[in-house]
Image (tube, rainbow, N blue to C red; front, side):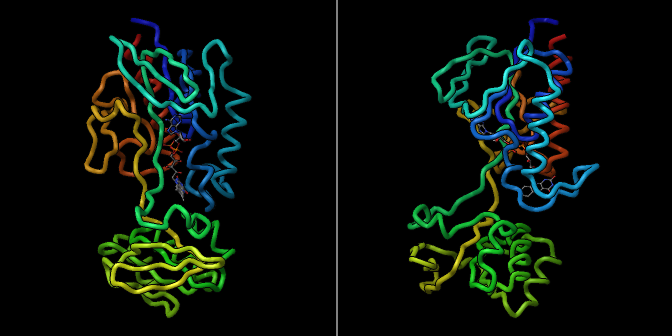
Amino acid sequence: MKASANVAIIGAGCAGISAHIWLCELHIQHQIFEGKKMGGMLNRVYNTIENFPPRHYANGKALAEELDQYVKKTVCGDQVSKVFIEEEITKISKKEDLFLLESNLGTVREFTHILLATGTRFRQLDIPGYKKSADFISQSTTYSAPSVAGEKVLIVGGGDAAFEGARILLEHNCDIVLSSRSEYCARPEFVNYITKSNSASLMELGVLPVEFIPNKSQIDVIFSNGKKDSFKKVFVRIGVDPILPALFSECKKDERGYLRTDHNCETSIPGIFAIGDVSVAPLQSIATAIGDGARAAKAIQVLTR
Ligand SMILES: Cc1cc2nc3c(=O)[nH]c(=O)nc-3n(C[C@H](O)[C@H](O)[C@H](O)COP(=O)(O)OP(=O)(O)OC[C@H]3O[C@@H](n4cnc5c(N)ncnc54)[C@H](O)[C@@H]3O)c2cc1C
């Protein structure tokens, strides 16, 4: 090896966990930092997972727990790796050939390589009343649909998530209003299914909520056309944004802010790798995130040999 690698993995979703498993396998020194909980986005997946072979999982949490158990039982010990849960990396800077990582606990550590596996966060609406309406807002139709069965609900969004959510809510006999800022970009079969339903009303494109007013048992919504309506719940399904620490303003990104990487998952800053949902990819999925973790770990081994 040139200089012995000491790698920081930021984020313990499936990309970060996979990198951890592979760095253990390759005996490469590393530490993994997770600001919240092992499993990342999986903890917010309420649908069944049927496309990560060979098993089906009842939901993302079931897979996250299995991965957590696997990591605890089978991967390398303290000499090669350390796992820090509930430690969030707040700053990354460069010092000669090394990267300095600062965390919310005030610690500063040095690393030769960084594997950024920070994933994405759900987009929110930036309108008055949004924050104080948390009880009336949901990002998951699978999770919230049973609690609003038969009620009138608003869906904001025009992509697959919005229309698939609408289908689930229709199955729960909800009365749906859907607001989209632009032309629908969901699969045509999803859009057709919703358009044909008598229980779904699609607002004129571009008419959006401009204010939320939470009440005791429902939320009043004022729209950009001046109209007001009341709902039991609002489902905000307007996509996700990548989570990037400050240093990454220097990295090359695509027009949506995702990190561009090469075939090794390395970004435009040598030594920094981006894996899973935070990087530009044709698909955001468990399988691709796990594959990225393996690819980046192997690349670090080859680059430092
Ligand atoms: C509703 C829904 C359903 C889905 N269903 C499927 C499905 O059926 N099949 C499928 O293949 N995929 C599915 N996906 C996609 C899949 O869940 C993601 O592609 C995958 O989980 C991404 O993994 P990741 O490791 O890249 O990111 P994440 O899982 O988002 O993990 C990122 C982690 O980084 C941590 N983090 C962020 N910033 C910091 C920081 N500064 N310091 C420390 N830690 C930090 C976060 O807390 C998080 O734990 C679904 C996604 C959603 C939202």
